Image (tube, rainbow, N blue to C red):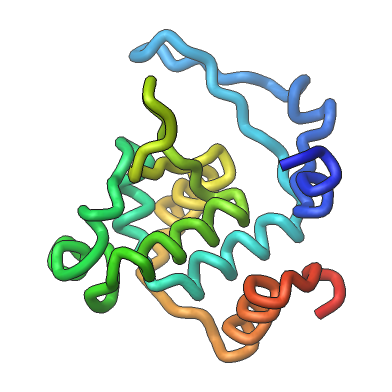
Length: 162
């Protein structure tokens, strides 16, 4: 993805986000930085997750460790509470790739290249933390959100046009 595509997606990693205060995690000894995202990016990410077939439980699991497609697909995803109903591997992959393109997930990479596992991005972590702190249950989007998400996803129309 080139810089123009990234900026068109609305991600705003301005110089402010690099100079923002960093918190120090004593347990892991690492620094974590909270990225500043525009309200448009947050709104689009929220809508994409609410319109996806996945529950918050899956994203919370991805916050801790990577989750592979076979773990989510077919009956295992529904049994573990990751999806509302069993999804084929193709449908699972398609839904996850949409969340990748929105900026919520990223694919895991190993020494051989891409794997079939996914993890949260900083944006995804921020959303999950926000939902968990507010005690938001797994909820679905309304009809308007489903239509907006479909237009943006399938027609690749920018958010500001709809």
